[in-house]
Length: 488
Length: 121
Image 1 (cartoon, rainbow over the protein chains, first blue to last red):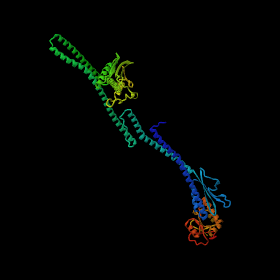
Image 2: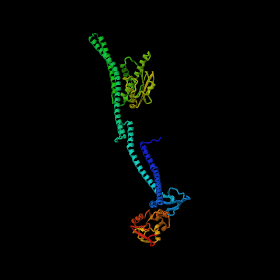
Image 3: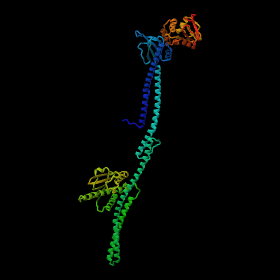
Image 4: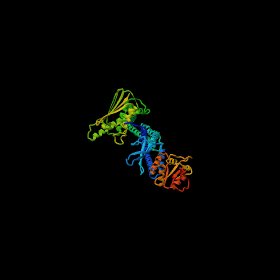
């Protein structure tokens, strides 16, 4: 099917109307007018013949020649006159003969009929003195001239109509096509993401209303988009805060252990110092001092452990957001696995899970954004713990106590990339939703427990911020394994 | 009796001249005035005898003769009246007019044209 632009359709419509009008003006109307002219001319010639015949009748019956004289004067003055004949019919034989003609002695054929160049009309009269016909023949030059004039007039009218048509075409193109095309271009740009597009909408017709409605729609779209972005930012912030909460729980647990040791050994050391002050036996004093030395060593060791944890956290939180720094993937994975585990344990004390770390030695530092990458790992681990906990809960409900939750985190170097695999033996992902899990706001968790942005944001972090990849392999009620690929 | 308007027709004519006028052959008088003719109708005694004595025709023949002339536009059509008075009135009102009335008619205007020196023929 031929694709016509709006402008082409307008021109096609206008030219169709002009062509149709031209057809009527050039062919139909002239034909009609010529027929009317010919008909009128026939009637006129017939009337003249009738008038002359009546004049002859009056002349012969009443001896009044005034009528025929006037009629014949009128006929003779007509420039189209070919001839007029007064025919008389012999009363006994019925044969017609020429009585008189104008011009004189004109020979009138017996079978004379009208043709293209001549109109022939006959009018009969009958008196006691003479019976006969008036035969009147008039030329059609005037008709031919009129036809030509009609044709020229038609051509002129056609030219005027064509000019008017072209003018109307330009007007329509300017008033309809141009605004509609501008609207189309603006709509395309809006579709491409430009929400600043506005079209001129000065006219008061439907096109103007369409333009104003479009402008209003684009403004409303921009506002709605801003609101959506704001809401999305809020959700992302919520997701970050949720991650932070879990991480904080892990950090608290990690620091609490060494602090317990520090507290216990400090308290023990205070008691030992009390014993030391009260003791008089040198051997006891020596043993107490050895114990104190050991306790202080342990206090120092666990203090350093707490300091190390805080230092790691600080290291990961330092740096401008979005800035890549050389990152030890194994260290980052190890720390955040522990944090995620303790975070999970902080919220679900009844749940336990085996953690299997399988890190390849010698993986070089990777240019990564630690804050972002840690979010991905934390998010995947949390999902893994959740899936494992869900499967354990379902198994317990069905009386199966054989199930042992396990999270396996593996790092490896392969084909110029660093691969991180996080695998859980949880409930798995059904095939029907496997293609949707990276879509924003998609979640299988109950309302209030998940924003549906975790995997979506993780996917963006891996692909857009690290130019890496993120994929998933899963079998329902068996395992789920996420694979993160980071280019070296 | 032949009568005529004071303008145009002479006081005396020959029969040949009168016939020439009455058959439309002579269409202007000597002074240039256009000839116009008034007859009595053929169904009157004067009309019938006029056609016969002057033109040598019957009334119908005269009628057809003048029809032919008028049809072809060769002469101004004569007028036909039913009484001498109407003929006299026409002649009196039209310069160059000539007409035929009954013999011995008491003329009130115009003049009598003698034909071959006779008032009546």
